Length: 623
Image (cartoon, rainbow, N blue to C red; front, side):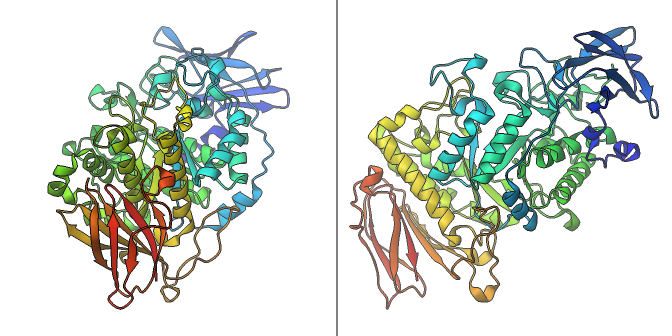
């Protein structure tokens, strides 16, 4: 670690120097605590005094005989008192409610060389298919099933989940998984969004090597891994980062900007040391653990003071974010970053060299809100709100958007995705099917939260596993089959993803049938003379074969509660059409036997004619 870079906020490997590291005769402990009056390392065999090192702002102690697996913490003296702190740069931690750090050897023999070589050859996967399964590791499956439990014995380990998860994702058609935060954190109910250990995977689900095994197994199965990280704030627990050396070392000293709306401490990125800390953390997960991307939480709070646009842009935070994004992607070729940002700040996904923040994708919170509110409406009122579904395309090309139906939408009284649909009982299922069809044909990458693929009707609870038993019921099993078929359709057809952000990749064929509440959309892949690039599909860690040039996909949606007889829409130049998926097929618990769809295309007039049952969507290949 270069100390001057550390102070300037340009260091990306602080953990290689700070923390606990093995030496030939023991372990050397180092920490940054400039205001401390004294520090001792507390271990099972007693205290070991640290001494000032380098420029005097760092503390160091070499403990003979110490080894991997030893537990420790720092007792930091300041102003006549002391507080015991976990090591900010520790590689492992005790299971909550304990909080001491653990000396750890991160040696692991990886088996994902083909994936990593393919990743390194890519210049980021911006034009490939990206279908993300968001999950909370502790409640995807539990030994106690759907019985609420806080008992650590009910959690599966990272390693135990590896093979079942890889098999499930491949079966259901997701090519990426996004893990909710895995940095160590004290309170289960925070889901990891109030972290304490920024270099330590939570011990709830096992050891660092077991997490590596999970990522390794997924990579070998052709599944990319995204980690949710929290760059804005950290938990207030006294043994964490708060007042680390007796003063606000990582956080603002002023509560007006130093305490977040969640009661946690905001990082102060006007300090180079804080910048180097977070940059090193993100780089660590991408490098040491082979994560392919990070999704950064609450970026609005980075851009604006306290996330409030009226308080102005926090320019030092913005510069930090630019440096982080460009730095970690340069050090880890082929990786990408995603912003969870609800603001209209210009340039979130613009490259840093062009004045942007440097993210590759941004969550489209506006699309999510408008779409869900539309599907919650009584069909009688949808005509008057017809353009809720078209409005997203008014701004879509301003950024590189990802469409999220995330954990935030299925908790705290919000109802699950299926529950949000208008009406009662069986009426919800066809609407949910059309919602997901609309999501897949809309430009932008995709994210869906676990359990939604079986039309779960219970809000997510981190204490219980998902309601997998719902598949015993025919309508839920049929919904699972629908989601699986739709996901694979998305992955297999370049028209649905290759030109997501290009003008010619999306066309409204009908966005004026307000009374009928019908819509028609066309998606296209790049034609050969447009210089199509091979997509980074990553089934073998590299690029898939060159897609067929100029593929055309058309989707026709009936979002009214009535059958639309003889609906017509012109598809310019098209002379033939083939139904790829009908959300009303009987195998999805609909009413239309496969092969009997009322769809015809006139080769002379190029007019597509359909009869659409209530809440039905038909997706076709046209030529």
